[in-house]
Length: 377
Image 1 (cartoon, rainbow, N blue to C red):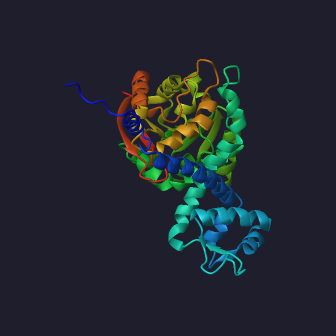
Image 2: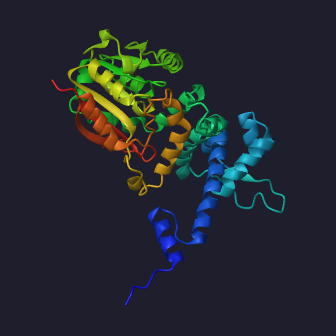
Image 3: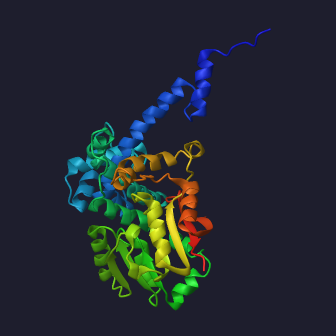
């Protein structure tokens, strides 16, 4: 007797399940509706965060109307009302009971004390979505076979990055210190450097903690380096110097100069990551350490299907990381989901001994990890 063939529809459902999609059409339609809804709401939250609306709500002693929000923020009430209504309907902001209804009582909005920290962090994260929206048309042109390949980071991106990194700063600092002996060395005084500094949020924090150590802060372009310099000067930090350096082509005077090097979400953004790792290796003293902070999920999409939030990383890769790194035809353009497996492979090829991997320990930066590396003696 021949085995009974499964109905074609059942076969299609199995394929959908294997690919991570809901098997039944109703659930899939709910999923697509949610994508549209929350994609839109994330832009509303980014706008409310940037214009000061949600910060005002999070500091308020009681419910506020859109007129009161507008007055405190020096904003146009009509815009305030629309965006805060979006957040209220989405459930991110509460509508005071008995307001905003048919009886004509003006709507008043509030954020409970227990929700305020989460809303602030979500607002910072959603700035990434607004940055993607600004670049949509430019990145769309990069898809065309005859179009450009890259769209470089602008000042707005570095400001977002500074705010986003602030969310998990203490946890990230703790994770950095899991490198054996690093904290003790910094306390005594060593030569340290960060490559690809952005605004230098973490390295500024470390420079303030360890005045006996000297920190060289570098980037390949002047704009973020200038931002880092201005903020360090504003914080009164005197144990920092700033230098325009391409880590893929480090100068000879950098050979075996540093005890410790740090990079944060930089290596996968470079056209040639292996060359950058070799540059770091060259700059380290024998026995020196390299702390590579990156979004170290799996290198394999099938493994990343287990964590839906990784979809956001692939999206940010599409609009941010790939357009930044695809600067030449032979660029690696790894993207933020290049993954732990690829990172370990390249670090080994550069000559490093990988001591281990440690997560930042924060929900907000849940995919971020520190790869602790050492240059052999």
